[in-house]
Image (cartoon, rainbow, N blue to C red):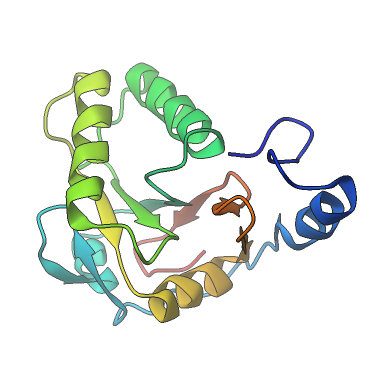
Length: 173
């Protein structure tokens, strides 16, 4: 996890500045997500991103990693609180997809994280899909939506922005 000053424990100020410079969001408005990219969902099923765009509903997409104890939790908790107050329900009015940026994370971890958030939300088994995948497909999604992150080997953590991307039913950012 990265602290409020952008530094993780064990990272020097200079290293932190170099990492922070790489962690950003480039607004790629009108970019189209490749629906053929495949991931594994929280049930262990192989899914294509296009599977989430079959019913004419927009998709809220987040890129996180499930073992992240700081920013990801803050972002997902903020999203959770917003969902609690929202009249719209994931599945009825829109879909939600969270993709792990860590290719080493497992389906089991995705399922556990999803279960935790659904229990906290208290709206039942809503349409919030937690996915894991390979580095190439993760990077393709990240590049498409302008999500710039880096892995810091010294701390064994990812430095990344907190972003929710809204995708139209046509997979357009």
